[in-house]
Image (cartoon, rainbow, N blue to C red):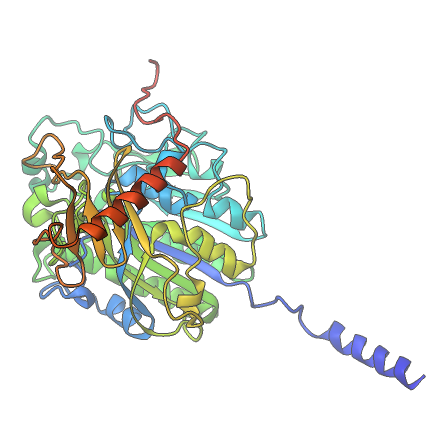
Length: 463
Ligand code: MG
Protein backbone atom coordinates (compact mmCIF):
# COMPACT_ATOMS: atom_id res chain seq x y z
CA UNK A 1 0.00 0.00 0.00
CA UNK A 2 2.77 2.30 1.00
CA UNK A 3 4.44 1.44 -2.30
CA UNK A 4 1.22 2.21 -4.20
CA UNK A 5 0.95 5.67 -2.59
CA UNK A 6 4.59 6.38 -3.33
CA UNK A 7 4.09 5.27 -6.92
CA UNK A 8 1.00 7.48 -7.27
CA UNK A 9 2.85 10.44 -5.77
CA UNK A 10 5.77 9.90 -8.13
CA UNK A 11 3.46 9.61 -11.13
CA UNK A 12 1.71 12.83 -10.14
CA UNK A 13 5.01 14.59 -9.66
CA UNK A 14 6.28 13.40 -13.04
CA UNK A 15 3.10 14.54 -14.74
CA UNK A 16 3.65 18.04 -13.38
CA UNK A 17 7.22 18.21 -14.66
CA UNK A 18 7.91 19.24 -18.25
CA UNK A 19 8.62 16.31 -20.59
CA UNK A 20 12.17 15.00 -20.39
CA UNK A 21 13.04 16.28 -23.83
CA UNK A 22 11.75 19.83 -23.27
CA UNK A 23 14.52 22.31 -23.86
CA UNK A 24 16.88 19.58 -24.96
CA UNK A 25 16.39 19.90 -28.66
CA UNK A 26 18.48 22.87 -29.71
CA UNK A 27 17.64 25.40 -32.38
CA UNK A 28 20.07 25.76 -35.28
CA UNK A 29 20.95 28.91 -37.20
CA UNK A 30 23.34 28.71 -40.14
CA UNK A 31 24.68 32.07 -41.34
CA UNK A 32 26.27 31.36 -44.70
CA UNK A 33 28.19 34.02 -46.62
CA UNK A 34 28.93 34.03 -50.33
CA UNK A 35 32.60 34.23 -51.39
CA UNK A 36 33.95 35.30 -48.00
CA UNK A 37 37.71 34.79 -47.74
CA UNK A 38 39.56 33.02 -44.94
CA UNK A 39 41.29 36.28 -44.02
CA UNK A 40 38.30 38.63 -44.16
CA UNK A 41 37.28 38.78 -40.48
CA UNK A 42 39.27 40.58 -37.82
CA UNK A 43 39.15 37.46 -35.65
CA UNK A 44 40.90 35.65 -38.53
CA UNK A 45 43.54 38.38 -38.79
CA UNK A 46 42.19 41.05 -41.12
CA UNK A 47 43.96 44.28 -40.14
CA UNK A 48 41.41 46.84 -41.38
CA UNK A 49 37.95 45.22 -41.52
CA UNK A 50 36.24 45.35 -38.13
CA UNK A 51 33.93 42.48 -37.14
CA UNK A 52 33.26 42.96 -33.41
CA UNK A 53 30.21 40.69 -33.22
CA UNK A 54 31.98 37.80 -34.91
CA UNK A 55 35.08 38.43 -32.83
CA UNK A 56 33.00 38.20 -29.64
CA UNK A 57 31.22 35.10 -30.95
CA UNK A 58 34.62 33.47 -31.59
CA UNK A 59 35.95 34.51 -28.18
CA UNK A 60 33.02 32.98 -26.28
CA UNK A 61 32.37 30.12 -28.70
CA UNK A 62 34.60 28.17 -31.05
CA UNK A 63 36.80 29.46 -33.86
CA UNK A 64 37.50 26.68 -36.36
CA UNK A 65 40.74 27.22 -38.27
CA UNK A 66 40.47 24.14 -40.52
CA UNK A 67 36.86 24.20 -41.62
CA UNK A 68 35.99 23.56 -45.27
CA UNK A 69 33.24 24.31 -47.73
CA UNK A 70 32.03 21.25 -49.64
CA UNK A 71 33.19 22.71 -52.97
CA UNK A 72 34.99 25.75 -54.35
CA UNK A 73 31.97 27.35 -56.09
CA UNK A 74 28.42 28.21 -55.05
CA UNK A 75 25.95 25.56 -56.24
CA UNK A 76 27.88 22.39 -55.30
CA UNK A 77 28.98 23.95 -52.03
CA UNK A 78 25.38 24.67 -51.02
CA UNK A 79 24.23 21.20 -52.06
CA UNK A 80 26.99 19.72 -49.87
CA UNK A 81 26.02 21.79 -46.83
CA UNK A 82 22.32 20.99 -46.97
CA UNK A 83 22.62 17.26 -47.81
CA UNK A 84 25.84 16.25 -46.04
CA UNK A 85 26.81 14.55 -49.30
CA UNK A 86 29.41 15.28 -51.93
CA UNK A 87 27.76 16.93 -54.94
CA UNK A 88 28.96 14.13 -57.28
CA UNK A 89 26.40 11.94 -55.54
CA UNK A 90 23.41 14.13 -56.46
CA UNK A 91 24.30 15.82 -59.76
CA UNK A 92 24.86 19.30 -58.29
CA UNK A 93 28.34 19.79 -59.81
CA UNK A 94 29.68 19.97 -63.33
CA UNK A 95 32.90 20.29 -65.32
CA UNK A 96 31.18 22.47 -67.92
CA UNK A 97 28.55 24.67 -66.27
CA UNK A 98 29.94 24.94 -62.79
CA UNK A 99 26.86 26.48 -61.15
CA UNK A 100 23.15 26.95 -61.90
CA UNK A 101 22.05 29.97 -63.96
CA UNK A 102 18.70 31.74 -64.52
CA UNK A 103 18.14 29.54 -67.62
CA UNK A 104 18.92 26.28 -65.79
CA UNK A 105 16.25 23.61 -65.95
CA UNK A 106 17.31 21.67 -62.86
CA UNK A 107 18.00 21.96 -59.18
CA UNK A 108 18.55 19.90 -56.06
CA UNK A 109 16.51 16.70 -56.56
CA UNK A 110 13.51 16.20 -54.29
CA UNK A 111 14.90 12.76 -53.42
CA UNK A 112 17.73 14.35 -51.41
CA UNK A 113 17.42 14.52 -47.61
CA UNK A 114 18.37 18.02 -46.46
CA UNK A 115 18.96 19.51 -43.03
CA UNK A 116 15.54 21.14 -43.36
CA UNK A 117 13.69 17.97 -44.36
CA UNK A 118 15.38 15.89 -41.65
CA UNK A 119 14.61 18.43 -38.92
CA UNK A 120 11.16 19.45 -40.16
CA UNK A 121 10.15 15.79 -40.16
CA UNK A 122 11.11 15.73 -36.47
CA UNK A 123 8.93 18.72 -35.58
CA UNK A 124 11.30 21.61 -36.24
CA UNK A 125 10.09 24.88 -37.71
CA UNK A 126 12.17 25.88 -40.73
CA UNK A 127 12.82 28.93 -42.89
CA UNK A 128 15.31 29.80 -45.61
CA UNK A 129 16.36 33.40 -46.09
CA UNK A 130 18.80 34.64 -48.73
CA UNK A 131 20.64 33.13 -51.65
CA UNK A 132 19.48 29.66 -52.64
CA UNK A 133 21.27 28.66 -55.86
CA UNK A 134 19.95 25.10 -55.88
CA UNK A 135 17.33 25.67 -58.57
CA UNK A 136 15.07 28.69 -59.08
CA UNK A 137 12.05 26.80 -60.47
CA UNK A 138 9.27 25.98 -57.96
CA UNK A 139 10.12 22.25 -57.91
CA UNK A 140 13.58 23.02 -56.55
CA UNK A 141 13.11 26.07 -54.34
CA UNK A 142 13.43 25.86 -50.52
CA UNK A 143 9.66 25.36 -50.19
CA UNK A 144 10.11 22.08 -52.10
CA UNK A 145 12.73 20.98 -49.54
CA UNK A 146 10.71 21.29 -46.30
CA UNK A 147 11.49 24.92 -45.63
CA UNK A 148 8.17 26.39 -44.52
CA UNK A 149 9.03 29.70 -46.12
CA UNK A 150 11.59 31.32 -48.38
CA UNK A 151 12.61 34.94 -48.79
CA UNK A 152 15.56 35.76 -50.98
CA UNK A 153 17.40 35.96 -54.29
CA UNK A 154 17.29 32.46 -55.80
CA UNK A 155 20.72 32.61 -57.46
CA UNK A 156 23.84 34.79 -57.59
CA UNK A 157 23.40 38.55 -57.33
CA UNK A 158 25.45 39.22 -60.51
CA UNK A 159 23.18 37.20 -62.81
CA UNK A 160 20.67 38.42 -65.43
CA UNK A 161 22.78 41.48 -66.25
CA UNK A 162 21.19 43.94 -68.64
CA UNK A 163 24.54 45.60 -69.46
CA UNK A 164 27.24 44.03 -71.61
CA UNK A 165 30.03 45.98 -69.93
CA UNK A 166 32.99 44.16 -68.48
CA UNK A 167 31.94 42.57 -65.19
CA UNK A 168 34.76 44.15 -63.21
CA UNK A 169 34.10 47.66 -64.55
CA UNK A 170 30.37 47.21 -64.01
CA UNK A 171 30.88 46.01 -60.43
CA UNK A 172 32.82 49.18 -59.65
CA UNK A 173 29.94 51.38 -60.80
CA UNK A 174 27.59 50.13 -58.04
CA UNK A 175 24.49 50.14 -60.30
CA UNK A 176 22.06 47.70 -58.70
CA UNK A 177 19.39 48.10 -61.39
CA UNK A 178 21.49 46.45 -64.15
CA UNK A 179 21.34 43.12 -62.29
CA UNK A 180 17.83 41.97 -63.06
CA UNK A 181 17.68 39.52 -60.18
CA UNK A 182 14.37 38.75 -58.49
CA UNK A 183 13.48 38.74 -54.82
CA UNK A 184 11.18 35.83 -54.03
CA UNK A 185 8.67 35.31 -51.23
CA UNK A 186 8.21 31.51 -51.22
CA UNK A 187 7.82 30.86 -54.97
CA UNK A 188 6.55 34.29 -56.08
CA UNK A 189 8.63 37.18 -57.42
CA UNK A 190 7.91 40.23 -55.25
CA UNK A 191 10.54 42.61 -56.64
CA UNK A 192 12.70 42.67 -59.78
CA UNK A 193 15.31 43.93 -60.03
CA UNK A 194 15.76 43.87 -56.28
CA UNK A 195 17.41 46.92 -54.73
CA UNK A 196 20.53 45.16 -53.47
CA UNK A 197 21.58 48.09 -51.29
CA UNK A 198 18.91 46.94 -48.84
CA UNK A 199 19.34 43.19 -49.17
CA UNK A 200 21.51 42.43 -46.12
CA UNK A 201 19.21 44.52 -43.94
CA UNK A 202 16.06 42.90 -45.30
CA UNK A 203 17.45 39.36 -44.90
CA UNK A 204 18.31 40.27 -41.31
CA UNK A 205 14.84 41.66 -40.55
CA UNK A 206 13.23 38.52 -41.97
CA UNK A 207 15.48 36.32 -39.82
CA UNK A 208 14.69 38.31 -36.68
CA UNK A 209 10.97 38.00 -37.47
CA UNK A 210 11.28 34.21 -37.83
CA UNK A 211 13.17 33.88 -34.52
CA UNK A 212 10.27 35.56 -32.70
CA UNK A 213 7.69 33.57 -34.67
CA UNK A 214 9.36 30.21 -33.96
CA UNK A 215 10.65 30.75 -30.40
CA UNK A 216 8.21 28.35 -28.71
CA UNK A 217 9.27 25.39 -30.87
CA UNK A 218 12.63 24.02 -32.03
CA UNK A 219 13.71 25.70 -35.27
CA UNK A 220 16.27 25.68 -38.06
CA UNK A 221 17.02 28.95 -39.83
CA UNK A 222 19.21 29.06 -42.91
CA UNK A 223 20.38 32.64 -43.51
CA UNK A 224 22.46 32.64 -46.68
CA UNK A 225 23.68 36.15 -47.42
CA UNK A 226 23.92 37.16 -51.10
CA UNK A 227 27.10 39.09 -50.25
CA UNK A 228 30.08 39.63 -50.34
CA UNK A 229 29.68 38.04 -53.81
CA UNK A 230 30.20 40.81 -56.36
CA UNK A 231 28.59 43.22 -57.23
CA UNK A 232 28.98 44.74 -53.78
CA UNK A 233 26.19 46.79 -52.21
CA UNK A 234 25.56 48.05 -48.69
CA UNK A 235 22.98 50.13 -46.93
CA UNK A 236 23.45 53.88 -46.42
CA UNK A 237 24.35 53.29 -42.75
CA UNK A 238 27.39 51.31 -43.87
CA UNK A 239 28.58 53.48 -46.75
CA UNK A 240 32.25 54.36 -46.31
CA UNK A 241 32.37 53.27 -42.69
CA UNK A 242 35.22 50.78 -43.11
CA UNK A 243 38.91 51.40 -43.63
CA UNK A 244 38.65 48.27 -45.81
CA UNK A 245 36.78 50.13 -48.59
CA UNK A 246 33.48 48.94 -50.07
CA UNK A 247 34.39 45.30 -49.39
CA UNK A 248 35.01 46.23 -45.74
CA UNK A 249 31.68 48.09 -45.60
CA UNK A 250 29.87 44.98 -46.83
CA UNK A 251 31.57 42.70 -44.29
CA UNK A 252 30.91 45.16 -41.48
CA UNK A 253 27.20 45.20 -42.41
CA UNK A 254 27.18 41.38 -42.32
CA UNK A 255 28.85 41.56 -38.90
CA UNK A 256 26.10 43.97 -37.78
CA UNK A 257 23.58 41.41 -39.05
CA UNK A 258 25.21 38.70 -36.91
CA UNK A 259 24.78 41.02 -33.91
CA UNK A 260 21.11 41.55 -34.74
CA UNK A 261 20.51 37.79 -34.95
CA UNK A 262 22.19 37.27 -31.57
CA UNK A 263 20.18 40.10 -30.04
CA UNK A 264 16.94 38.59 -31.37
CA UNK A 265 17.84 35.17 -29.95
CA UNK A 266 18.44 36.78 -26.56
CA UNK A 267 15.24 38.83 -26.66
CA UNK A 268 13.27 35.74 -27.65
CA UNK A 269 14.78 33.92 -24.66
CA UNK A 270 16.32 31.16 -26.78
CA UNK A 271 20.00 32.19 -27.04
CA UNK A 272 21.16 29.46 -24.67
CA UNK A 273 19.34 26.80 -26.62
CA UNK A 274 20.55 27.88 -30.04
CA UNK A 275 23.63 26.73 -31.90
CA UNK A 276 24.78 29.30 -34.47
CA UNK A 277 27.26 28.45 -37.23
CA UNK A 278 28.86 31.23 -39.30
CA UNK A 279 30.82 30.24 -42.41
CA UNK A 280 30.95 30.70 -46.20
CA UNK A 281 30.39 28.74 -49.42
CA UNK A 282 33.82 29.22 -51.01
CA UNK A 283 36.84 31.49 -50.95
CA UNK A 284 37.28 35.04 -52.22
CA UNK A 285 36.70 35.94 -55.89
CA UNK A 286 40.21 37.24 -56.50
CA UNK A 287 39.57 38.45 -60.04
CA UNK A 288 37.63 41.38 -58.63
CA UNK A 289 40.63 42.94 -56.93
CA UNK A 290 39.55 45.17 -54.02
CA UNK A 291 35.91 44.10 -54.58
CA UNK A 292 36.94 40.53 -53.74
CA UNK A 293 38.19 39.46 -50.33
CA UNK A 294 41.37 37.80 -49.18
CA UNK A 295 42.20 34.26 -48.17
CA UNK A 296 44.88 35.63 -45.83
CA UNK A 297 47.98 33.46 -45.97
CA UNK A 298 46.15 30.68 -47.80
CA UNK A 299 46.84 30.11 -51.48
CA UNK A 300 44.43 31.17 -54.24
CA UNK A 301 40.65 31.66 -53.96
CA UNK A 302 37.17 30.82 -55.26
CA UNK A 303 37.11 28.22 -58.00
CA UNK A 304 40.33 26.49 -56.99
CA UNK A 305 41.15 23.54 -54.76
CA UNK A 306 44.09 25.31 -53.18
CA UNK A 307 43.30 26.05 -49.55
CA UNK A 308 42.08 29.60 -50.25
CA UNK A 309 39.28 28.22 -52.43
CA UNK A 310 37.68 26.01 -49.81
CA UNK A 311 38.92 26.74 -46.27
CA UNK A 312 36.50 29.14 -44.59
CA UNK A 313 36.59 31.41 -41.54
CA UNK A 314 34.16 29.54 -39.30
CA UNK A 315 32.72 30.46 -35.94
CA UNK A 316 30.28 28.40 -33.87
CA UNK A 317 28.41 29.65 -30.80
CA UNK A 318 26.09 28.05 -28.30
CA UNK A 319 26.12 30.02 -25.05
CA UNK A 320 26.37 27.83 -21.99
CA UNK A 321 26.74 24.57 -23.92
CA UNK A 322 29.74 24.92 -26.23
CA UNK A 323 33.27 24.35 -24.95
CA UNK A 324 34.93 27.63 -25.92
CA UNK A 325 38.24 27.56 -27.73
CA UNK A 326 40.13 27.53 -30.97
CA UNK A 327 39.58 24.27 -32.85
CA UNK A 328 42.42 23.23 -35.14
CA UNK A 329 40.86 19.88 -36.01
CA UNK A 330 39.12 19.54 -39.35
CA UNK A 331 35.46 20.21 -39.98
CA UNK A 332 33.35 20.83 -43.09
CA UNK A 333 29.93 22.10 -44.03
CA UNK A 334 29.27 18.46 -45.00
CA UNK A 335 29.33 17.74 -41.26
CA UNK A 336 26.45 20.04 -40.32
CA UNK A 337 23.66 17.61 -41.28
CA UNK A 338 24.97 14.69 -39.16
CA UNK A 339 25.94 17.06 -36.34
CA UNK A 340 22.52 18.71 -36.17
CA UNK A 341 20.75 15.35 -36.51
CA UNK A 342 22.80 14.00 -33.61
CA UNK A 343 22.12 17.00 -31.36
CA UNK A 344 18.41 16.94 -32.22
CA UNK A 345 18.14 13.18 -31.68
CA UNK A 346 17.06 12.64 -35.27
CA UNK A 347 17.95 9.42 -37.04
CA UNK A 348 18.91 9.93 -40.68
CA UNK A 349 17.64 7.50 -43.31
CA UNK A 350 20.19 4.73 -43.84
CA UNK A 351 19.46 4.31 -47.55
CA UNK A 352 22.28 6.57 -48.77
CA UNK A 353 25.89 7.49 -48.13
CA UNK A 354 26.67 10.65 -46.19
CA UNK A 355 30.06 12.34 -46.38
CA UNK A 356 29.81 14.23 -43.11
CA UNK A 357 30.90 13.51 -39.57
CA UNK A 358 29.11 14.22 -36.30
CA UNK A 359 31.07 17.10 -34.75
CA UNK A 360 28.86 17.37 -31.66
CA UNK A 361 31.55 15.87 -29.39
CA UNK A 362 34.00 18.62 -30.34
CA UNK A 363 31.35 21.31 -29.96
CA UNK A 364 30.29 20.10 -26.49
CA UNK A 365 33.85 19.33 -25.41
CA UNK A 366 33.21 15.62 -24.86
CA UNK A 367 35.61 14.60 -27.65
CA UNK A 368 39.30 15.49 -27.68
CA UNK A 369 39.68 15.45 -31.44
CA UNK A 370 37.54 15.92 -34.51
CA UNK A 371 36.30 12.72 -36.15
CA UNK A 372 37.14 14.26 -39.55
CA UNK A 373 40.67 13.28 -40.50
CA UNK A 374 40.50 13.75 -44.24
CA UNK A 375 39.07 16.13 -46.81
CA UNK A 376 38.32 15.46 -50.47
CA UNK A 377 38.65 18.52 -52.70
CA UNK A 378 36.50 18.36 -55.83
CA UNK A 379 36.76 20.70 -58.79
CA UNK A 380 33.50 20.20 -60.67
CA UNK A 381 33.09 16.43 -61.00
CA UNK A 382 36.75 15.60 -60.50
CA UNK A 383 38.77 14.88 -57.40
CA UNK A 384 41.75 17.26 -57.51
CA UNK A 385 43.26 16.95 -54.03
CA UNK A 386 43.03 15.01 -50.76
CA UNK A 387 44.04 16.05 -47.26
CA UNK A 388 44.93 13.44 -44.66
CA UNK A 389 45.89 14.86 -41.28
CA UNK A 390 48.27 17.73 -41.93
CA UNK A 391 49.38 16.47 -45.34
CA UNK A 392 47.63 17.45 -48.57
CA UNK A 393 48.29 15.93 -51.99
CA UNK A 394 47.26 17.61 -55.25
CA UNK A 395 46.61 15.27 -58.19
CA UNK A 396 45.56 18.17 -60.42
CA UNK A 397 45.71 21.91 -59.90
CA UNK A 398 43.96 24.86 -61.42
CA UNK A 399 44.13 28.41 -60.24
CA UNK A 400 40.99 30.54 -59.82
CA UNK A 401 39.41 32.28 -62.74
CA UNK A 402 42.34 34.29 -64.01
CA UNK A 403 45.38 33.01 -65.82
CA UNK A 404 45.08 29.26 -66.21
CA UNK A 405 42.57 27.72 -68.63
CA UNK A 406 43.37 24.01 -68.27
CA UNK A 407 44.11 21.91 -65.22
CA UNK A 408 47.74 20.96 -64.67
CA UNK A 409 48.46 17.31 -63.96
CA UNK A 410 51.86 17.14 -62.27
CA UNK A 411 54.26 14.25 -63.04
CA UNK A 412 53.74 13.07 -59.51
CA UNK A 413 51.19 14.48 -57.06
CA UNK A 414 52.31 17.61 -55.21
CA UNK A 415 52.54 17.29 -51.44
CA UNK A 416 52.29 20.02 -48.81
CA UNK A 417 52.42 20.01 -45.02
CA UNK A 418 49.60 22.35 -43.99
CA UNK A 419 51.00 22.78 -40.49
CA UNK A 420 54.47 23.94 -41.52
CA UNK A 421 53.33 25.42 -44.80
CA UNK A 422 49.67 26.57 -44.68
CA UNK A 423 50.26 28.68 -47.79
CA UNK A 424 51.11 25.56 -49.91
CA UNK A 425 54.39 27.00 -51.17
CA UNK A 426 56.85 24.14 -50.71
CA UNK A 427 56.25 20.77 -52.37
CA UNK A 428 57.74 18.02 -50.20
CA UNK A 429 56.67 15.01 -52.28
CA UNK A 430 60.31 13.98 -52.93
CA UNK A 431 61.01 13.71 -49.23
CA UNK A 432 57.83 11.84 -48.29
CA UNK A 433 56.99 9.25 -50.97
CA UNK A 434 55.36 7.06 -48.30
CA UNK A 435 52.85 9.83 -47.49
CA UNK A 436 52.05 10.32 -51.16
CA UNK A 437 51.53 6.61 -51.52
CA UNK A 438 49.15 6.55 -48.54
CA UNK A 439 47.09 9.53 -49.78
CA UNK A 440 47.03 8.18 -53.34
CA UNK A 441 45.62 4.90 -52.00
CA UNK A 442 43.06 6.83 -49.93
CA UNK A 443 41.99 8.79 -53.03
CA UNK A 444 41.61 5.57 -55.06
CA UNK A 445 39.61 3.93 -52.28
CA UNK A 446 37.36 6.99 -52.02
CA UNK A 447 36.76 7.22 -55.77
CA UNK A 448 35.95 3.52 -56.00
CA UNK A 449 33.28 3.99 -53.31
CA UNK A 450 31.54 7.05 -54.74
CA UNK A 451 28.35 6.32 -56.64
CA UNK A 452 28.28 9.13 -59.15
CA UNK A 453 25.17 10.33 -60.92
CA UNK A 454 25.11 12.35 -64.16
CA UNK A 455 25.46 16.10 -63.70
CA UNK A 456 22.18 18.02 -63.64
CA UNK A 457 23.75 21.45 -64.10
CA UNK A 458 24.16 21.69 -67.90
CA UNK A 459 20.42 21.27 -68.69
CA UNK A 460 18.77 24.45 -69.97
CA UNK A 461 15.06 25.34 -69.85
CA UNK A 462 13.32 24.40 -73.11
CA UNK A 463 16.20 22.37 -74.55
MG1 MG B 1 30.09 31.63 -53.64
